[in-house]
Length: 268
Image (cartoon, rainbow, N blue to C red; front, side):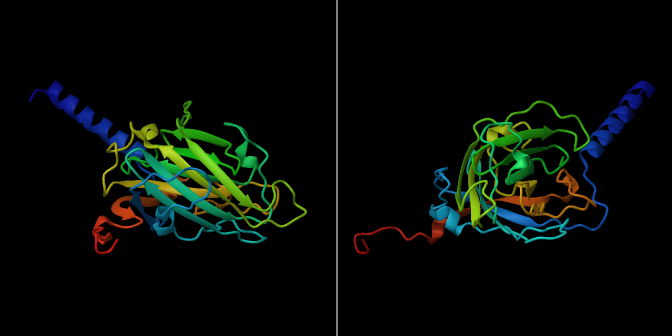
């Protein structure tokens, strides 16, 4: 091997190591991320804000949200479930909220001023600093973003395509004189938005993603809650080193195929 060839190989190794380091997201402690298994749905849910499909009932809920920056007020909890198929990632959530704020209704409106819910998703587990975020309110207004080099890196223009959001609530909007119960969202995110980052498209059982869910905003009692708790002294959601882990499961929701008895003339 010539000196110049050896030099090129060494330089290539340095570049590969640097690229790998640029994808790393290091946590300062022995943080163990929460994990969730995303079940596959045999029938795509109707995105209507009703959450009445059997697949949603059968899917497991993620663990309770944390309140890493709690100071005062009522800790209002959140229930979240996910499903997947070859084309979509589905998210359903119910948010306790005694005073629901939702003034905005369009894409790229300042949704963070309202009570809102957010997913942050890093589809390539080997590059968790490359992540996407989509944030919405009960009226279907949403904002979206992409961070290919982590929170401090560039923010290229990116719009999620084909997003479907439906919401519902029990209570009233933008009226702090009464007490509301909750609001919910049902969302379908086309996986094609992440195909240049995902290891496999469509996903394969066993694929792992890094992700987090966040809540904040509203006029009354903002709590800055999260599924996987942050590690910053003040509220900050762009912390990929603290994202949880999600595994694509081959388990079917509501029932795995081997648990469904075939129909016969005797039991009809």
